[in-house]
Length: 93
Image (tube, rainbow, N blue to C red):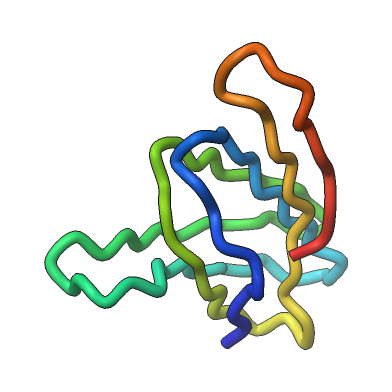
């Protein structure tokens, strides 16, 4: 389980991109780190051998954790401005 130190904000749209560098199919579970258990976001991604997948987050205000069999499950995060602004960014989680 890996928890990002980044907190997502509702004001932006995010694309989380995961790569599978292994010869096996992988499953990654994405879990919201939120105190409100009722509205907890959970999503599963399935990555084919040597494949790439992404998930989009909108109206999301929280941190997240990744559960997978990867030694280090860090994704690329593309932060896209929700409105016409100039705060686009790309970074590792």
